[in-house]
Structures are given as C-alpha cells and as structure tokens.
Image (cartoon, rainbow, N blue to C red; front, top):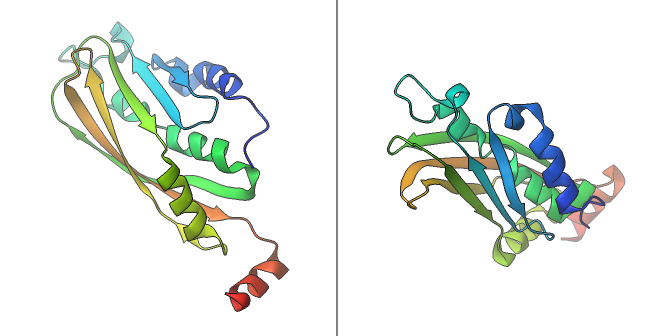
Length: 163
C-alpha cells in the first residue's frame, strides 16, 4: 500500500520545504514508484563555508528525509518510518554542483517486509555517496532508519502466537 500522493507532487512540495529550499537543495528526480531519487546542490554564497567550498551541514542535509520519504512512498500509512541516526564522512571539499542518488531495490523492500511482518522494529542502514560534477566522491553519509509495521493491538498478539 503506497501513499495516495504522486511522487511528482511529493517532489514539488519537498522542493518548497524551507530546510531544503533555503539551503539550495533540490530534488531533481523522484521515480513514480519511489524507488529512485536524485538530489542536487549548487554552490552559492549562502551555502559555502569559509574555504569557499560547500558547507558541511548542507551536504549532510541533502540526504534528509529522502530514504524515509521513499520508504513511506512504498509502504504507506501502515508503517512507522523515522530517521534514527546519521553520520557523515567528508572525503574532499566540494565545489560547484554536487549530487547524490538514492535507490531502493526489490531485495531491500522484501527484507523490510519480512523483518516487520509481525510488528517488530527494523533498522536498515543506507550508505549515500555525495559526488561532484566529475563523479568524484565528496562525502559519504550513513543513515539508519526505524521501521515498524502498525498492527492493531489485538491482532499483534494473535499473530505472534500463530508464528
């Protein structure tokens, strides 16, 4: 059960969301099935650091809330999906335009379905590469998400007993 909102509408709304908009972050592509997303960031005077490269906070923000949104688009309102933790490793300074791509595979979706079938929490980890226009790695992010299927309280106990 996916969201009742189209991916294109979600993309447009997130591009107007102040934390992304005012950082210069733009969701450039979001597939209709929420399995692929591409996010870009151009270097401007307001999002660069003292060394005239991309501000690290903007690089970090490029990945928030992308995987959570993609998973919500695939699993819908029947699941609780949150960002649990994240960290970043800065590889080299980023100048000009940078981008990152997000993918959800059939295997990842199936693993989440299996891990959460009876209401258990699942903490999948995703690695995101931020690259420059030449395709060179600028930073690497690691995000851990919290996912749990919402079950009716009476059904949850019965399902665990049946398993």
